[in-house]
Length: 248
Image (tube, rainbow, N blue to C red):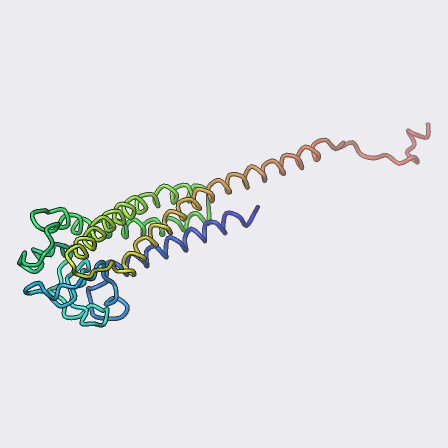
């Protein structure tokens, strides 16, 4: 019982730290042309027949890039935070663009809100990690951590849902228009991986709190039993059979 709480706490902390790494990778993906960040994108589509578009376009949180046949982000547009996924706006044309992208702001706002939610998830995950260290010391720390980790979990869930809705539908629109498209495995994997880590971490922080309570109850009960037997013992001094009073 004594090693249960620290073990659960360490596992929760490691999972939260893993989620932070995943979020960092997705947020920074496309911001610089360096491995592995230039391999992270949300959607890749054949846009060779779209005027002003690269042969194969890849969308990140910062820009739209040309894969140049390598699967990496090359020759990217100007870097800007919360770069929208909106082909008519990105390429400034509607020629050879699927009708599902035309006359709607759905993809524009979904992709832009994603950026804000990624940042919120990352900030609160960092706070949760800092407070999570208290779970190693006390049950109160575990309780606070189990509550705080729910905030990044909520926003990561929201982000993953927006990402999936936005880019899966976008992929289907491109494929329907005979423009081969596929989702970015790394961006999707890291995002859903962060969600899974935070979900398990929140459960383990709760178990850490419960384990701490059980350990305290067990210790109190053990101390109480020992105290009972100690108090039940006679404090009367033993007398020898040679005692004069006994002899009389």
